[in-house]
Length: 175
Image 1 (cartoon, rainbow, N blue to C red):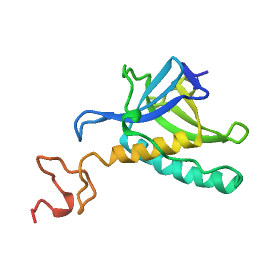
Image 2 (cartoon, one colour; image 1 turned 135 degrees about the vertical axis):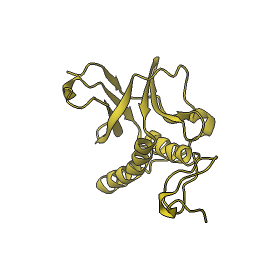
Image 3 (cartoon, rainbow, N blue to C red; image 1 turned 180 degrees about the horizontal axis):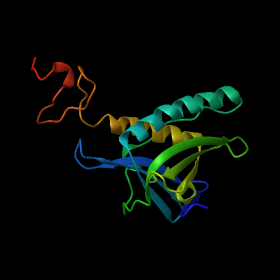
């Protein structure tokens, strides 16, 4: 059995956020159900992969269940801000998605990052049960948030810092 389990069914709110200057930001996934607030640390790549995967997942659900209404993606930026206190329960190692047609909810499952060789059964887990619209809005907000970071080098694809960038493709030469 997992050491810590959170099962927020349904969530009243779900969002992502980042704290810190570009290049040093820490990314979070946060959900609320009534008085329970769960905050998890995620990597930027996990957040952007989740956002892309959500759109694909929602398209698959719409294809499988054509009778469902379209999931809206309306969000107001101030309402997507992280809530205080930011007290992460754990760092996410793996994310997964599922869908329950009976309740028309998507479940986002987050498993704790575990040191190599440790028992995966001891990993903390969080399950956030959300409407399709909540997930679409969170995914689009996550994409927007990730885009506010450091610009990407057109030559090598790596993030560029404001003070400069060593580009491996330039072989140490400036253009």
